[in-house]
Image (tube, helix red, strand yellow):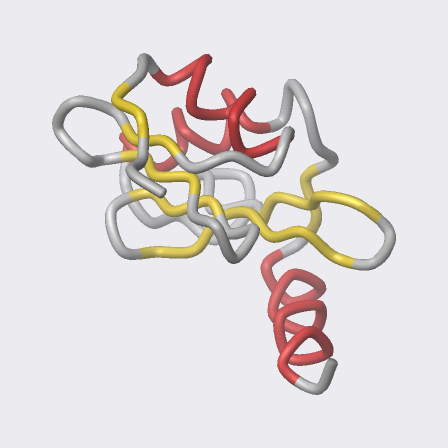
Length: 96
């Protein structure tokens, strides 16, 4: 399925609804595997308990200003968890 080109809010909504989408410059992407990426960094995943977002912000584990903004946008639809907890959840998904 071809991914739709949308604004950031629409990409976040697409991710939360299991659809693929990306921003025009490709900085934010919702993939069919349930991941949300800021550039190539996975910042959001779909777990068996719902969606979560890693705290890749200045108050968590800083990556970039743009990624911090993407995390802030995604926090409107999913809880933000520590990067350590996020990595544990990613590892658990690999075993499913």
